[in-house]
Image (cartoon, rainbow, N blue to C red; front, side, top):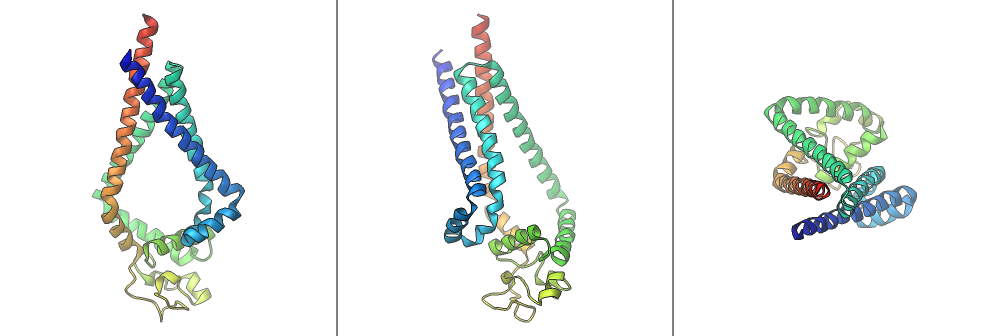
Length: 242
């Protein structure tokens, strides 16, 4: 019984943290959407390059709601000794875990045909830079954020903007393509600025182990949550049948 009480307490604490985290994320998402002006002012002072990420409000709301539901299921299932809630919690975690495993398999599969994937991505990137950049606000925002954060220009390099709609209409290149030069154009472009494909590869090489460690830690927590919920489910069933 002591072990059972310990598992219940751990389940409650773990999911209580998830529940509180869900409230925090949901609150941030609602704040961003309801009072976007003050959010922009604060973010503009702290990190001006991230102001364009205001659209993450809806994502924060969705993630916050999901975490609230998960925390509620886990806490109530443990405290009320509800087999139904515990099994629902277990199934949701199992689905998420399987999706992560499937994603890992897809990543490994793509690594075997990475050249084909890079060529496909290159074709897509070249089209968006040539046709959509400067015309479609969402595409422009994504590229500006990527180039500013990774300190890169274009997908392969600045020549991706040759014959682009943006360059024909403005005669300029994105500021990220030049180093402290204004206006930024083909004459003042910094040829040492890498393309985003190379910059992104360098970023992955540098941070891949960190990402892998975090992903492994998340999977371990999910496995632990599934084991605990399943043990509680079986223990509750045994005690009720007895």
